[in-house]
Length: 357
Image 1 (cartoon, rainbow, N blue to C red):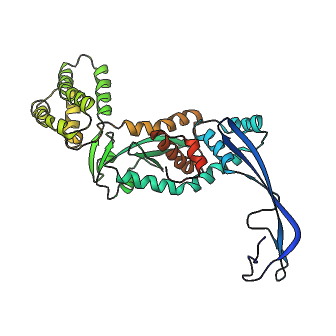
Image 2 (cartoon, rainbow, N blue to C red; image 1 turned 45 degrees about the vertical axis):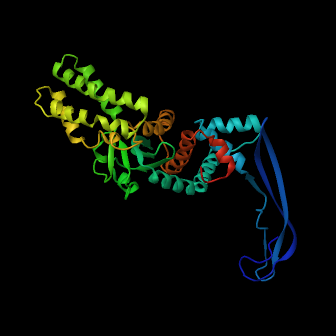
Image 3 (tube, rainbow, N blue to C red; image 1 turned 45 degrees about the horizontal axis):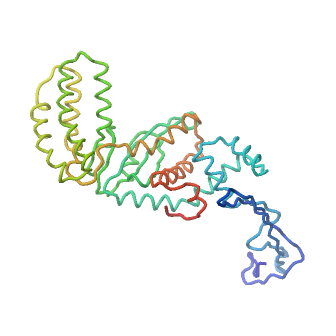
């Protein structure tokens, strides 16, 4: 029972004969499965002679049905990790546990968990910004008929998502303000003005070249250009495969890079495709080969693409997202992808009630 009136500080409450109760429905996870528990708490109300009101005990709300943390974690896991639709989750709860909840209740669970783990997102951001490199990528999503953009920031172990209404890269500048590591990205021009070292993704470059080569199989000058590029990059990537991203081995290729620019890039071409990639190599000369100069810098943006993959699949399933809930969903998605990148169970993390992964 409360001992003091919440409206009149210092006014003692008298024990009332009125009783209030609270029922908590939860799921307990054991080695052999999941067990539903129903716990009812009762307590006497306190009476204030000054305001003539009765107050529930601090722990209880009158005739209130509460779903416990384990129950909510199970629901969030099925929505987030398994991508189950709301209707399927409500039907599964009824079939397996005899509990009937609304789709709105599921959204409330997700909102509660996003608030609960707001500190987790802050900690993830701190860890990403301490990393010697950060992968950044972006993708479009439809929010109630309006196209918006989701940006992902990851160091390969921790993941954070941000939502913007346009593709302007201001969010990247804000997130990486004061960052002194290396930004790994594709060739979207919005990244170019970020004030830190950069490494452009060779997978994107090779993919673009292969697409153009497939479309123009008779462009002999472009073919020669691609062959020279291949002769440069293949031995480098073979060294990465054998020795890892270590400067002591990769630094030896700087002379090859200089020779490639001197003999292949700094020459005249007639082929439009050769000229196109010549300009790209000139523009990004100082951000294509950062991984040769520093230990441990990835030469591709695969981690960024992997972090976005779950969202891409959800986008195909859902089609459109709700504006009022998307930021909360993205916060939880960052936590889920962090668990995935670290080989941890999202469900076990949610059940632990810890805020640091």
